[in-house]
Length: 285
Image 1: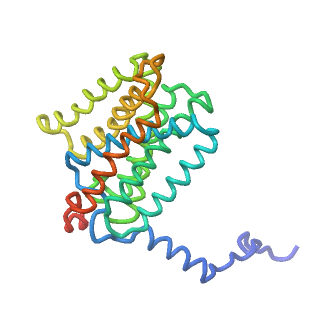
Image 2 (image 1 turned 180 degrees about the vertical axis):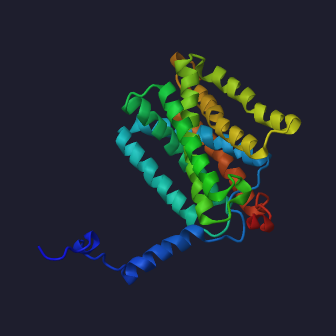
Image 3 (image 1 turned 90 degrees about the horizontal axis):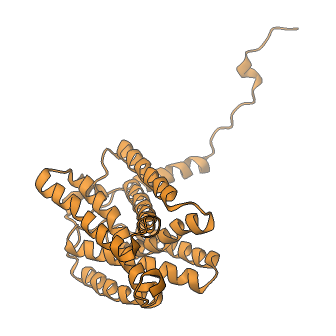
């Protein structure tokens, strides 16, 4: 044999990245790190929490109405398309707007309910298991978000990447809250009304802990944010399900419409007054 070549010389040469590939990667990087002039989430106020709870109940009722009125796969597809369209509108805006933001929240509420229900009804996963799964998933989202950005504060949502982390966390909190609410009402046999009361008491815990015992405000916010989901969904189920299931039997469709009306009114007020727009200098965080 002749003189041996190095191993590396036996391998085919790696193709140099094309201009199109380089530009594509550069474009994706710029899109993810683009900085906004203002924070792209609303200021936290009493109106924020009212609308948030209303959207959780509306999402629960709407999801249940759709899956009982059409084949579940069709309902899930409609929910997914609506979610993607709403998120695309929200993500492609450069400023916070009440209408695209809350539309995205509503669609997350609808599809988040469907995602949790698919695990239980479609795949027969117990509520305890799905609740644990979504809790772990949310913890992973927060850990990765914090390691990459150094904060999970909603006052820091001033870049595209932070916004993507934010909406990933929001979607996971909705799925977790749905599973936890169903586990409380069905697995623990508390029923929908008792579950709603229990979560109403639980949501006061982060407020009291933050105000009087120095709980980190970021932790307090996300604690309360998670609990709003089972709170609103439990009362929506209680109003909509038949008497045989412990409800008022008002009908899921009627409950959905009844909760949609105040959401539309409040969001319209926010859009006109812009009272929930965070300060411009918050974007520098």
